Amino acid sequence: MVIVIRHFFYRDYVGLSLWPFIILRNASLRQDNTLINHERIHLRQQAELLLVFFYLFYFLEWVLKSAWHRDFYAGYRSISFEREAYMQENNLHYLEERKPYQFLKYVFTKPVQS
Image (cartoon, rainbow, N blue to C red):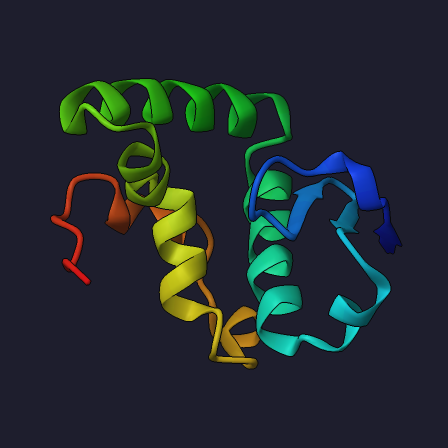
């Protein structure tokens, strides 16, 4: 279910997933298939890890990778869940072909520099 909450977001963030919801900054983003797909990937990840473990793993990985990079945003972009979602957000059929726990392949692999 997609809901819009304008004043929920920090800085430039426009969407997030809190199972079972996708929360967007504004209603026009409902038409952004790439963003919706990105957030749907997160919903699948959350379901696989029964929410609590997703959030624990996400936070722990963010802290460790932020310390490693000495940068919070670089740490965020290095989180395995985010890497999977960013790499596959343009593939609108990804969730149909995705195998369970695919985010694990992004935990220790080196991210591509952009």
